Length: 140
Image (cartoon, rainbow, N blue to C red; front, side, top):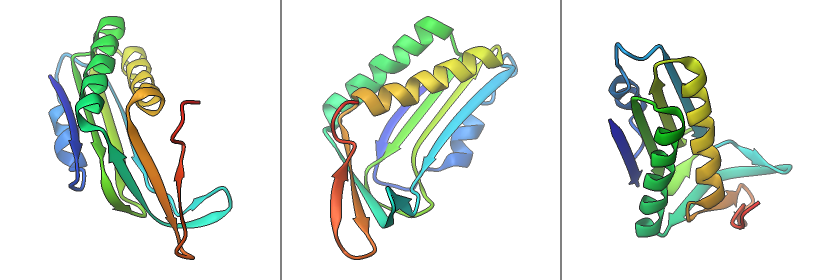
């Protein structure tokens, strides 16, 4: 199972977790990135994500394929939210089910790092004072 999605809707984490259920898998690793209320000493009101969807979907698929080649997980689910996201809600959700925990952890870590590094999704923070800034828009 491979599920890749970019959505403007709230991420349905329980359904994603259930989609990873597999009796052949002893390890399930999940990363959920949530919107926090601060960044570099500033109070954040919300985030807004934009993306170039055709390229983002292509790069997500390529990253998932590389994870499958390297760690052979049975299931991968990646959902990234775009649009305005309030404090406390999930912006990205990654789940990997594999035969063993080491493979699940490694693939999950690889996927979030690859998303942050190469997927054309950009983040704008809006602060409680009404100002805003695009952050982490360039590769590290």
